[in-house]
Length: 369
Image 1 (cartoon, rainbow, N blue to C red):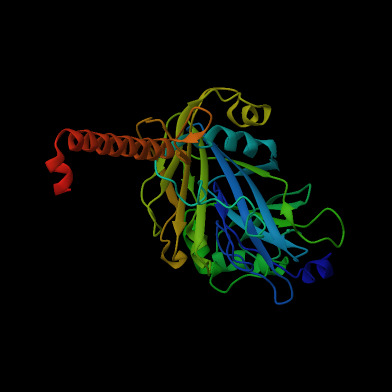
Image 2 (cartoon, rainbow, N blue to C red):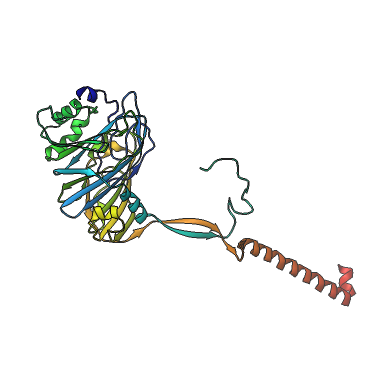
């Protein structure tokens, strides 16, 4: 077993709790925190999705990764304020949340033709295609160990960040040197840890695509999103959260990132799907979705502490620009311009005729002309 652990080629140290983010960097950092690739393999997170349910006493986090690269194994660690229970999550949860929070689509019309409208469109195109074994270090306790699908989950306690780092290293976690220092605030507050080793179910395969969601529940008197480890990331980070609580929830501060952007806020029944009911208990809740960017992760100076605010509903609106048409699709501008030209022609013709009639009645007008 120890030999197998020493052969792990790729270790990812990621603090994950509630986020939905997106990343293009191939080897470092995901939207949740620091990612540490090995020298021989690479891994990246195209998208990681997280949802959190908080009822005032218990916090439940469901997370899913969409990864790419050639890494055959990876691992991450998540600090939690209380004793955690870990199970597999329901993949359909995220499809339900995406459907509930999708933007409202509206048409927006313009009068004058733009690129892509007739007569500036090109019907032939341009030829381009569309686009973790028991503890070995002192000061570390192993609360539990489970195998859940592709996840090997260890639930840990620690009284010393250096001891926790030593345990992780001894058990196959290849760590950045700065990790013990980043863990110090959590050790001082007597938090616990969920260390997860993940590998594809098919032997020899690489981690690729959407991984099975993981569900983590723990007692918490406040809705807190641990973000401090994300400061170890070496590329800009993106955070995305689905928050299901009694009321609308927002971060107290940007903690070193850009201002969080609310993308959806509204009351839902909580039983719109089986997967969603499994998280909400089938009861009505307020759903808040937000996104936040961290251009400089090293500036992250705290965890996200979320507070209750007014239940103001909000939904993004996405506009589709369309050329204004009438009747059978004739552009309105063409009728207007054509009508104007016709009126001008008629007026000119009438003026010419009137001039001729006057010239016939008054020969002096003709000679003057």
